[in-house]
Image 1: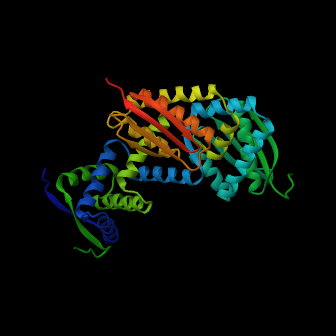
Image 2: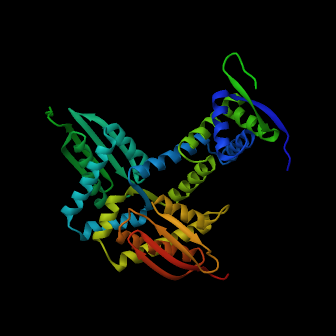
Length: 190
Length: 191
């Protein structure tokens, strides 16, 4: 099929970068630009923007780098429930605590950690961090009312916050919801 | 090549019909056509800098959308591996097989414009597996490799894959597992 062509102005620096990419792939600038724009139109017809798509891609790459894998939620929930019922509770809590410590150190700040939890923990329906009496309070809500997952998640959060220099001062957990208060180590709560 | 006084620009040649569509979209978005095109090129360059082509990025996005709809979630691999190692048993393997079977059925209904098997392979790759397929129709092999997945988790994934492949119309001729390696000999069932 033959197409008529028209000229379109593009930012020169971008056009040059696209041209370099095209060369590396053995295409012409014309071919690559049209492929890109064709993809944009196709995505638009599906109600998606290219920016969202590239961000989604970055998210998964970031998740992989952080040691996260995708598995069916049903299997994960079942696994957590069974482990909680049948394995040594202390061992299990320590495992989640250690894992939380790892993520705390990996993200290096509370803000980055909370951002990562929001982005990656798809079964968290809500997570909220706020200042509270000389420290911070974190509230987490799960999409399903599981006591096992809340208990283990609290150990994960405790490990993560402690590795970032916070000390747990109170914790309240019910099925599907968790509230934890921390203070900076060395600080006294009024 | 043409240059404006405000910002340096370069003229690129684009299909006329594509320009018509792009004009419509940019108007809807309330952006001048040039700005809209520049944004698109910026994202394409960003995708390339992430080490992928735009097509690969879009494919992965689509796959992720299907995975989220199918109820897949991201979890820490280390916790998963260690919990699975501790909790062994036939019953758990049966559950994984059932879940794989459901997932295969889901994909065969959900993926209309593509190959459900490709989405299954993509899902496994997103779980950290490298997948190699050969001659599936005439009695070929489905192999998965991962340097980071424990033996117990490997066995569970093998049951999941078996269940999914059966739902996608394949017969499992044989299956074997080593730590981080799943090897299935499969054949497409006659319809």
